Length: 98
Image (cartoon, rainbow, N blue to C red; front, side):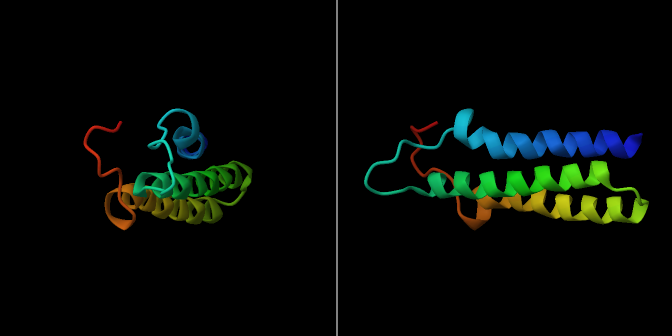
């Protein structure tokens, strides 16, 4: 039961990462040049989609070892989701933007 709650929580976070940059946390409006925040959002959409797929695989997995390994992969992806806008690509450099 505890593993199902963790898997559902991972699914929710993955869906928020995949859908959030498109509808909730939109990047700066694009002009002729794409900003860092645009590319960070695109990367987060991909990471979120993969995390959501991993969560679905966790829900379908039968063996405990498989669920643990999928949890480790999801954790690594969630850490990369934190690092993408902070260290790897970066966020918006304009202080007046959202």
